[in-house]
Image (cartoon, rainbow, N blue to C red):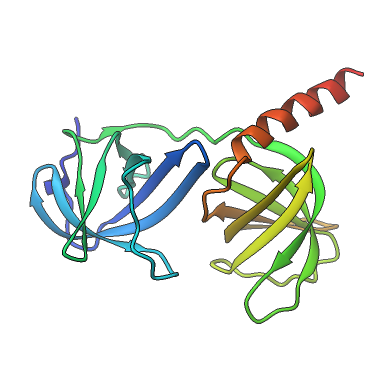
Length: 206
């Protein structure tokens, strides 16, 4: 059984998944007002205050109910009408089980920047189109869930800048792993991941 936008209530949360040839960006939003079965006014939680344009990206919309199995609307549209974001979907959302984006091991140092802190070097453990993780080997970063930061690193001839938000902490005996949700569209990220995968495979085969 599918889910209509009109089945949602005010303040119900949504995840916007915007994809282009530059990569993938996830943004959080919530329902402000349902207009029709397939149209709703939404509020997008995006901190830098820009007016967002979704004309040249592919949009999927997720809603996770209490049972934890999300619904997804594919090929959605979001337009700005008099300063408000209007979401239009094609029909009902369908259940789907999330499959993690492919993660590639990286193992290179990056320069981390965060408001209110000095820049510091961190180890990028792995990267996917939707996120990355940082290995804090001396447990000195003291990051918290929701913290936002950027990392810049070079590898295989690519210079990459990722903006991320901490969504997971895993404390181990010798390090803390911070799982990050990517907050920007990074040019060349998809190509880099593909090349890194091939390089890692060649290194294993040697």
